[in-house]
Length: 455
Image (tube, rainbow, N blue to C red; front, side):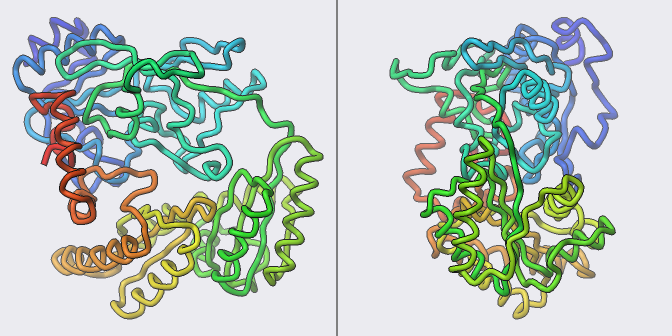
């Protein structure tokens, strides 16, 4: 295999066989290790095409990899295959200010791209929690994030994709055009498919004008139920917040302890953290509406985070919660999504289950779109007990989410860790159709071979 890959790459530093570092065989959690015969760092679409052609002809598994920030095992390879790492295909190829588009390679890091775009007075809204993720990885999981309530998710900003199919064929799906009913929208099928259908080598992304101003607001409540009920009122009042995050006081405490900073309004039981952006006049109008909703909902306080340091610290606490949990114990991260009117019902169920089974469960997330981030904590359980009790409790949690009309994942994807729970809640006809689509893209099933569409 090494000789064949070097004939394509012609650079020994970019082809590694044997002694592959563990980080390239796992995901961001690093607990589950895969196997691979080779790790390759391509620089061009042509190299990717030639590698896939070779792999397809020889039925060799191929696992595409971005920045490695995935949490569900989507980047864990299986068999003696090839890991395609896109960290060197990290160039912003064009920012077209006339069409409000950017063309980038898949290895471009999200926060780097957003910084460059904003320097030009433009804006790329998708805002997942992991800012060091790659654009290609965001597209592969249809990443959402905190700004999804106003601006939508990654899918809404992908206009075109250059794709390499499993057999090495290169196609362009989509374009810079804002409208397209010219046949099936192939890019939409690939977005969110976690590297199982095709390999992304270029991305055409939609940009919008950068908002004039932005302001965060912390609203405190004496119960999570009051906070969640006010979310529906905020949306109905057309206040158009950029973000609506919910977090309980007991969870905030973890972030405070981890960062050694104090969160405002410590006597509250729950909080909504909102951001408004747009013109200053728009923000003022929406703040007045928020004050009215807060009064009607019995909020304890409404705190405008005008001080930049205070605002940054509040968002740091919200953003660090998963790492804060990890600092205490190993945990299983979930990103269950439920209808927005069922968030408090689901969280209250989680809190009751936590007490019943004596397993710590820490929840927070995106109140505006029902995406609940839930950390199920191992504590001092031995490996066998942890695996047994975790599986039993995940069965209960997913079952309850499905009863409420929810889904297994809002933005992390299915990967390897959620296949069982997806299969249990998905109609056989739907799964069969997914498999047929997979086969039509990748007849030999070499792309991300361990993923759910293959089983």
